[in-house]
Image (cartoon, rainbow, N blue to C red; front, side, top):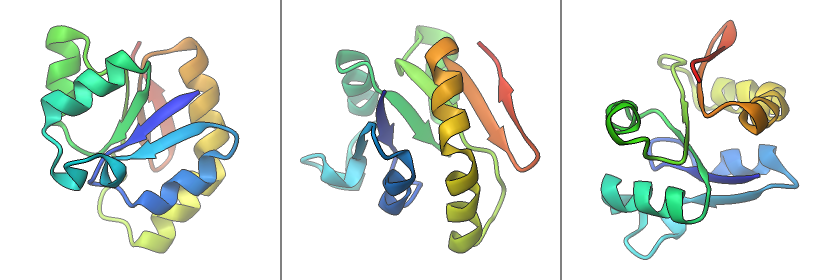
Length: 115
C-alpha cells in the first residue's frame, strides 16, 4: 500500500505503517508548503492514499475524486503521544480497510467507511 501523510500530521506516524511505501509531505521538494492540488496530483499519479486532517481534501474528493484514496482523520485535539498511540493501534486496520475502500474517517471510537 502506498500512503502519503499530509503536513497536518507528524512525519513520525510513518513508522506505524511498516511494510508500506509511506511518504510525508515534508519530503517533497516544496516540503510542508506543497499546494493541495500538487498533493492530489501526486496521490493520483502514484496511487497513494492520503492521510490528512485537512477538510479541504474532503471537498476535492467529493467533487473530483482526488486524492486517489482519502483517510480524513477526525480525532479532535489530541496530544502527540495520544495520536501516536491511536495510529499504533489502528494502522493495520486502516491499511486493511483501504484495500477495499477509498474513503475512511478515523474517529476516537471507530473508523467510518464512506466509500
